[in-house]
Image (cartoon, rainbow, N blue to C red; front, side, top):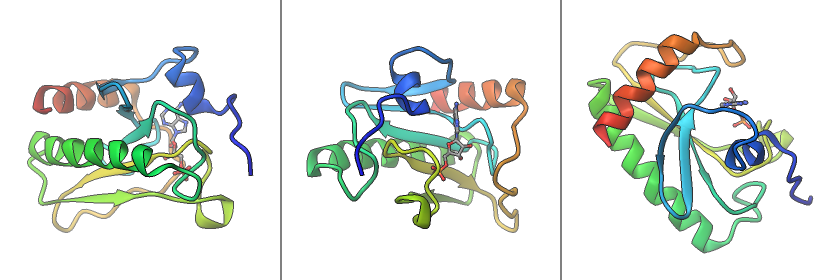
Length: 137
Ligand code: AMP
């Protein structure tokens, strides 16, 4: 499978479509998921192309997981969460819908289930949650 540079996260990286960015460094970008399954649900991606874990280089994976850890700690603090769920899907059969490597970071509260996938979030709430995470990084 080849990388499609017209995927939605490549467009976010190029600034062609908006995103609520919460963190970036030379190698990675983190932004809020627009269909959040928990308050504070964010995504971490490499700035260089790869579809998923199956074709990523060790350097891409290393950079992304460093940012995942940074954002997991920040989002747990920002939401006073009890835990954090980290998810990553590979190819359609593995549950992947956007084919640019990304890790989901979801702060979790004891006893609070994830919301169903595929429900558009409230953009004002997402912006506020992004501010909270940015302040905690
Ligand atoms: P998956 O590929 O299954 O890990 O899912 C892709 C994720 O990207 C879903 O959680 C979507 O809500 C999220 N998503 C899709 N388009 C956007 C976008 N433009 N901005 C932020 N998140 C998005």
